[in-house]
Image 1 (tube, rainbow, N blue to C red):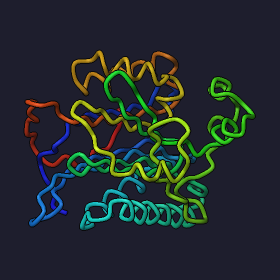
Image 2 (cartoon, rainbow, N blue to C red; image 1 turned 90 degrees about the horizontal axis):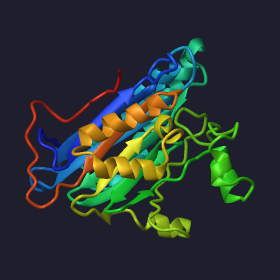
Image 3 (cartoon, rainbow, N blue to C red; image 1 turned 135 degrees about the vertical axis):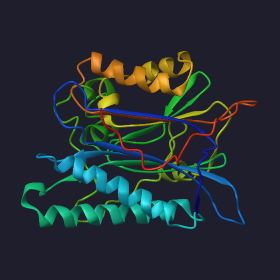
Length: 289
């Protein structure tokens, strides 16, 4: 693919360490491309990663994840988004595991990832862990991903309710992450309606986005404290994506901000909207305070 200085989507992103005093262990990147010299279709790729591990190991893991995944996508031909994302995520996982094994103080570190790849209006996603991807369309919001957590499994088995899960002591127990001994299974399920089985959800890859659609990638520092309908209300009432990201982060911090919080917003321009060209590439954007 060929890097482009002009993305075909509106983009805004913000990462904050929160109010607990901990280091920011979230990372994100957004990149824009054209598929190639003979195929100029525009591409935007975005990734959010939440690091796991103490003594600064989490931020190292998240940065490795974002670097390896973004580089794997950038160096590809862009023809098979799902396979390219799977390979890039697993390369990142191996790099984190190797780094962890080589340094005692970073032993056991890991990271989540949530990836969005938009080719013109076609949406492809991939994810591991509990960082989420949402689609806001009109008056509705839909979480496209399913958390790889103990509480999500408990909800599906009827052990606890969704309301009970919010304050459950196991809410942050992750079942799948980058940096594990075995390569993590990358999830390609895209949940658009209730009751879809796994194959139906995977078949939703390549969804056609519509003008005005907004995609949100975020770490659990947001979704632990802000509910889906509140996210939708914020996105619907703010004049632009930048103020949307700022408001969401501020809301999380006002409610305690016990974790790092990262939000990346992508929206499809409405008819007649113009995206202003910005200096430099929309690429390698890392979040901090």
